[in-house]
Length: 300
Image: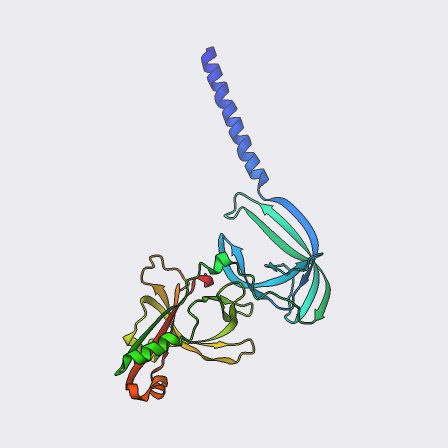
């Protein structure tokens, strides 16, 4: 074997050893704990709408309102393993918070919290709670409701002007849908961080297509329809809110290319024919239908 061949074989062997060492280091590292701490929290007596993060996506849910030690401000907290929360009680609990890093995971960095001790549990209503923990960057990306109507009447202009002036739903609020811890569908509407409507409980009922009024055909939804139903909006005491009961078409906007399991658009319909016949008998009203399209994005 000449010197040239010998050094070539030696160089290849060195690269092989380096490669094996690198692979071995990656395998041995795996999941790392990057931080660990323990602290005491005061947890409020009710959960509040807020934004959580999972698998690279933000979504609306109910979150804990909690104060850390030495803090007077409520902050949003997500899941705490082992903590059995009961509404109507304010808690003091001790928890651990562990941060992990694992480059083999889809989300390489994450934090887990776990209950260590329940220090106290008092039946009381927590004070000075915020209305929500929804950042502006989230709700500003939720489209405003799209309002449409169709009128058949001798004095059509009169009815249309009344519809423009008296929308049942505010058109400058971002309507967001989410499911509470009890799995009931809910809605909260934000104009800004201080102007809030709801949260409302939504009582849902499935319907067959043939149960929808014929009048809706004069104002068909611009969507691929995936389901039909009826929604009644309730306050927290589960009392129906005046005029907030709608027939519902659930679907995907016609421009949607990728259809997933969650409808991207919710169409709220109401037949107001009898109402306007009574309100404006001289207008000779035949049909009045209204429709609101609200986004289903916050349910994703």
